[in-house]
Length: 115
Length: 116
Image (cartoon, rainbow over all chains, first blue to last red; front, side):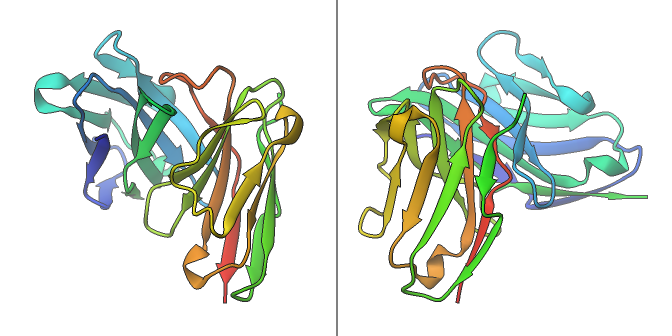
């Protein structure tokens, strides 16, 4: 079975501080992994995705994530938080199943940026 | 390029009533998804279409939910009759390819349903 676990439903950081949002996956086969961001009253927007190429993936808005197979992790980081980063962040895993592509989201992490 | 369009944005109904949501994906996108996002949870896939055919509806409560994608373009999701636990945001997404595991999904703004 495929699933993702996001540790910490709420994370607060000071403006300019490091952002670290945690995501662990469980998978019996190599997964494809995604991070999406959701601003209030908006749909989800792709930040970045891992598709088995480089393990360090760079995304939009200065975010990046590193795929670590040994730790089954795909944590999202940003060196310096900006006020505009305040949003809900979702980690997701995808793989091809018998009935087509199966896509599973984590429960989300709400990021607050303190001025 | 226009994004995924959804309507209405908000809907309030009484339990046991019926409701329908509409989604127009990005032009040319072959795959369309409907998700249910309950407050405080991640989106849960309800149904996936490849053109006008259903690829996966294993998590769709078929006793009350139905969806169609006639002509392989826009889609409607219906709930009949609605229950209190159906209160959620219903998200539509589309992707350009044939539903592969590496596809990027493009999401609409969602429809927020409140069932009283």
